[in-house]
Length: 236
Image (cartoon, rainbow, N blue to C red; front, top):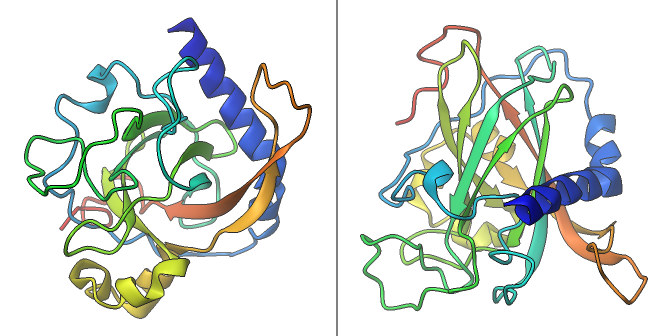
């Protein structure tokens, strides 16, 4: 677990340092509505994420000695904010998703696409005083009947739990055919749809090439409702 903890710290620092100033520079909104809630879906990890053997901030491999998962690697940076654009500290952020094949690691996923044994499938993080979190993952494949997406569960002190989903700007054609996505209001869809662009991230610890990597990187702003507002973030 020591190596996993070190890797989690490295990934968080590297991703934030590489492009997080972009996200902070975009702040300045005086007020924003809460991020739209969404169904938790049938594929929340069993057992819970924090009971899994691996749940750090690098989903692209199980540990430093494991092979890398198939697919396009991406970096998701995030900010958890209140409606006045103030960062929220000590917020638990859980994510889970399908692998490159569009398959979940879950016994109820009966589609015939193979599981990727090298993909972590989920992560659990904690925001700091700046409200930030960051993880490295694989662009999720298209699950049958759904557009590519990443699930989030956000738990903040004294606030209602938020379950939501993040979508990809590059998947506009599939997004328009996704019932869950299209049920949202236009402004809600815009808030949960993230664009990605290639940005440098620091080379991994132990790398021998001495060069920096560039990966598609996007910023997801999560806005939580007022303290004690049970309706603001209740999942559908």
